[in-house]
Image 1: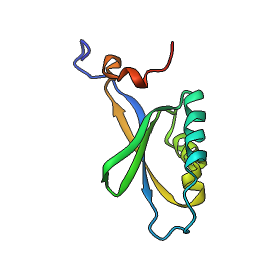
Image 2: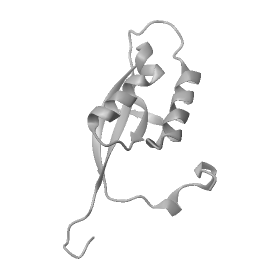
Image 3: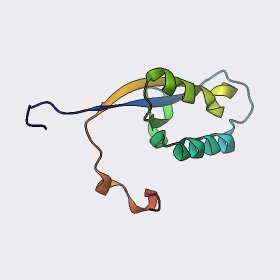
Length: 113
């Protein structure tokens, strides 16, 4: 908390990915999705992501984006191969983060310095 009593926040965008029940029978493009996540990492856009078990609001996976606007987050999400193929539908939710404890990140997930 700051001296003024206001907790500073930063807007991030949580993207929930829901499988589309009646999507084509084609296998979702998992390898392309992973490459897309790597691209977002290289651009410094995605903070974290992964599978959800159990599902949350029917979503089986999620990632958290740091972009300037919701429109930018939606543009990135629209490029996700899972969304483009139609096997997953995204929900983009604004999330005002109050902090991130870097020491809570498991060493296996830390990027090399």
